[in-house]
Image (tube, rainbow, N blue to C red):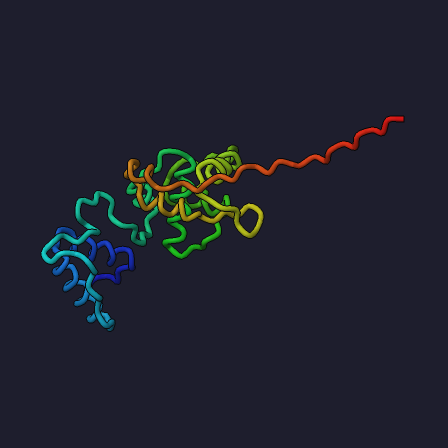
Length: 192
């Protein structure tokens, strides 16, 4: 009997077995797996013509994000090109592996340096995370100082990677205009 597989490995195997299947066949496979695991089956997709390839796999060069327990493989799949992208890919990896939704410098360093075997620039972390937060819009400030949470834009961006054209089409969060302080009008001096 083979060793017990983790959820990421199982999802990857199911994904590969569905690749190229028609919607009907994909539905049959998923329903069978669900029933074998004690579920009630999978409801069919709405509005998809019979005999066509499942929309999740049709022409999609990016497999959907599935839980992976190998940071190096996840980074290779997503192919981040700058520090901001590395930070958000590492944060999404942590979330997919149930390691938390609030991310600190130490959390990101562990994923990037130790697990993904990439360089981590401790000296410029504050500058880089601020750029990833303010300019790129990948993060929101967390509840505690030094914590960051991935924005919905950041999640969508990572889901689109490595397809830079698709990532570029994602609507960026709007930047608020800075509030200008209103100055009180000076009282006109009374003529004597």
